[in-house]
Length: 216
Length: 92
Image (cartoon, rainbow over all chains, first blue to last red; front, top):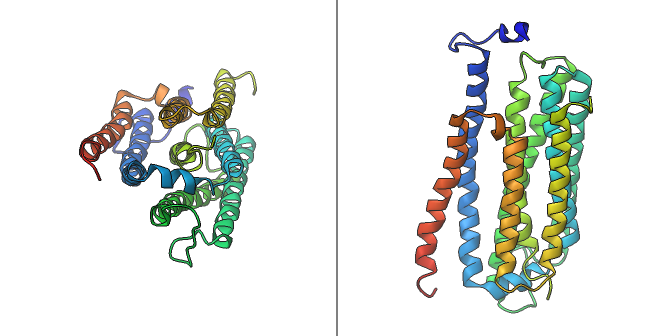
């Protein structure tokens, strides 16, 4: 332990603990802006769902509850592998770090694959606004708003996940070169914070998009 | 490695999250009228809190990180409260 507290820290910090807290805080500041970025979309969704509750319910019946549920489980599982990766990095277990990073990347790709499958179904069913949108149910205009929100919100979420997979790949390359250990694991820690945030967004998206009046 | 208490904690939280997901889906198939969305969002909030508190290490973070984590949601609350005080109080 004594060695680790003596670990090299950048000259603007008093000690490694302060540097570590500053690393995390920087990511939290970014995540705060992300909360408000996604928050505006959630607000938009809330206003239109309040205005057209029945149209949103009938439009959401075109969503695949099973595929969405599998994807939620995949992302929750990936949060577990990320936190285990951070733990491995903290304890200098290079091999385990690499294994958990690769597992995270695989789970992220599974999520995007299933999402792509769902998108392709929507294209086949003419449920993509702006691309020959055809809707047989009631209030097609309001339903189109639902699908716009669906594609924008899940699309931006998928973009975040794609960036996350890129970051995890970069970390895996670093881990294979033995770049991280008990003295230096901030990149793994703050990337983990980002990944968990993307998971939390999906935790809210799933019931809001897929689970409206499914009992009908 | 599996004897490390924090790893056991992480796995326990992971299992609780999966159980909450199963709860989310099963409750959605029960007709509770306007309370379906309320319960769904409450469970989502519990899941998000578990991820934040344990996986994002808020549990062991300094108060300054707590302030920022709560601050983001506080501003979100203002955004929602002011907007919906308008939309919920007049026909649209």
